[in-house]
Length: 126
Image 1 (cartoon, rainbow, N blue to C red):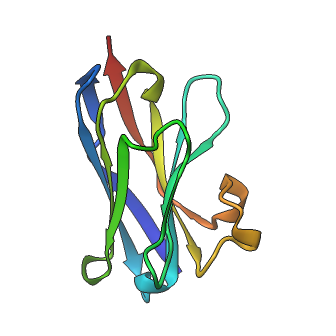
Image 2: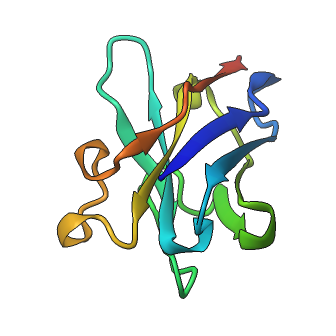
């Protein structure tokens, strides 16, 4: 199993950029599909982006397509979320998550991921 640990959150102005990192300790990081989720105040945890094990195929929520980029470095057991053109609606706690191989039925919902970090706060000010 792996234990994700996020870093890189903070405060940024509208239109700015921020990069989040997640290091997942444990064995065989390369066999895990890694995902980012977020949870804003009063909202459910929602899918943001994921990168598949093996072929590094990426998946994005419609709300972040073209603005966010997910990437991974298996040698460093790290996954990164580069966030550009941030707006106030991106304000949330961002969580890194992992699932061995593929999510069940390729369903990128929170319930399909097994290992979670503690989260990192991202605040976008207007």
